[in-house]
Length: 291
Image 1 (cartoon, rainbow, N blue to C red):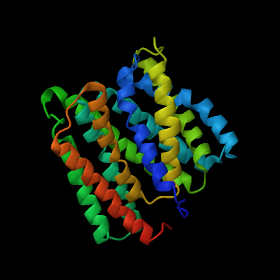
Image 2 (tube, rainbow, N blue to C red):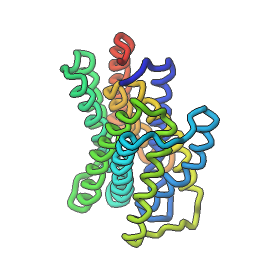
Image 3 (cartoon, rainbow, N blue to C red):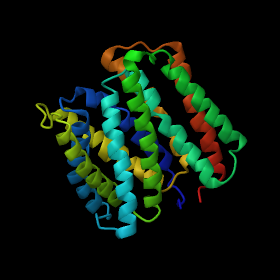
């Protein structure tokens, strides 16, 4: 059950997604394997999360058997998502990986609609349609479907579905567990799952340059996931699902700044459509607080 959101909860959600959008770029900059990058993202974040949790009055603790199982299952989905996503972004176009990876946005939003046991309102339906159109426009110029990219595309699509499973599980955990203890436990479980997988597949584990991995841990896990897991306890799934779609827009901006990729008029129209979808869904959220 979600509690009444803080006035800045939506801003925190958007900030978290902005931090998460840098993840694919940092993974590409790292010099370890895809699962190893996921392991270091989680493992390096844990000391920082423990300190922040202590300062915030949310010390890590064992939540009890049933709740620990929920978090462990969520962590399995997250670990599998990271392994698939990190591999996918190296085997396909960045636009393809972002497009297929964001299937979690609509899957989690659909979960929220199903959980509410009622059809979306007019505003919610309009927001979903705008978000879908915006995502398609944003990726239209960069996505390229071909046999060469098929393996990476399938990995990214699989990662998106796995990420939706992680979000659903963590939303359930957040009903009884504070955000930081939940994230610390999920990060520890996930790291413990990714390490043996990386070793078994023969990936390079130790980096020559720690900087991309440290920034990945701080931006994507501590800041990005920290704010997202907080939002899971106070914001409706529909709002969170649509907010996830800000990541492709930010990724396009990163591509423009880091790789001088051109932003077409369709890219800008797509970004505006996603922004309009967020405005519409927030109008509904403001009119009817989450319960």
